[in-house]
Length: 182
Image (cartoon, rainbow, N blue to C red; front, side, top):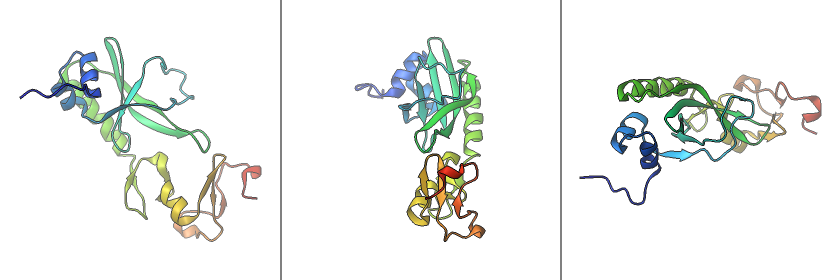
């Protein structure tokens, strides 16, 4: 039985742009794609901002950009621009070949590389991308349970935290003295 195509899903539109059917798209690239709705990494001057990047996975695991007959896949790398925003840039971008077996291997290699960077939060025991980690805890737990405050690009640790837990009280390395806690 054919898949319903109304309303059109993003995967249908991406498959059409790649001139493949949705089943092949899902087999090679997976599902749950979204448009990257945040600025790209301003540090990467080689990025083409005129074509949108699409992202998939929680945490983000794969990026796709389609520009006519040319399409790129990449693994996302998140970088904080101060305390906000978190921006993602493509790393290890590869041009897709159009051969499903070859493209599936490239996707698998990118996923393996991205997933190898994931770490577990010691408090919540959840898997997180490195851009969401502070030491051995995710940023959410660090704020909620450990009293960490993120401001001006610095992570301010409460004085009562022990260094045996992997954190040092006061400011994080790299923060200027004027960015320390008052």
